[in-house]
Image (cartoon, rainbow, N blue to C red; front, side, top):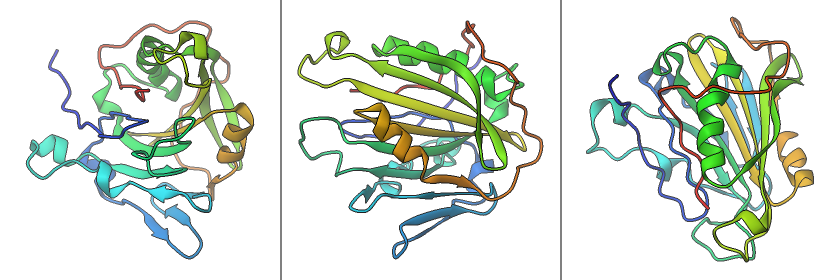
Length: 227
């Protein structure tokens, strides 16, 4: 099996490496500075960036000297509570939205299938599964959600607080849309999720109807934020 081309998002406190195809390049969406609203009409969703947060979407785009496939990679939105290079008592809370080709994962038929390779990478970084993938209703759509946490005692750096991650996935027209929220508390995760909204129900989504207790790893694995 041939390895996937990847691009590395060079962030100090949160790095997510995702395989994003040319298909996602067709509509990067728009961001309104006045309202702090990111909108993507092709995928029928919007996400409001909290006041005072900084964007790093452009910085996370692949460099021009990378391969043709890597240069097609697309992060739709990368927003941080503070500049990720700035020091703080806890890692910066993060909203990260990206798209990947469903064909990058042979055998992936449902949004829930995506969490098999994701969970393997997340747990390798010291996180534990809080909730296995389960349906999550958000307006007119149903996404698949999984939650993770890493306790301070399990962290490679002992003085870091507990971190929480919730990732949502939905399939649209052969594209895997992923929405990842990182924060130092579950309450903050919930507040960040409230910033995400879907305007219409996307076509051809394929979430399963029940949670999955165990996950089998897939050959191609998305990476996990590094702390």
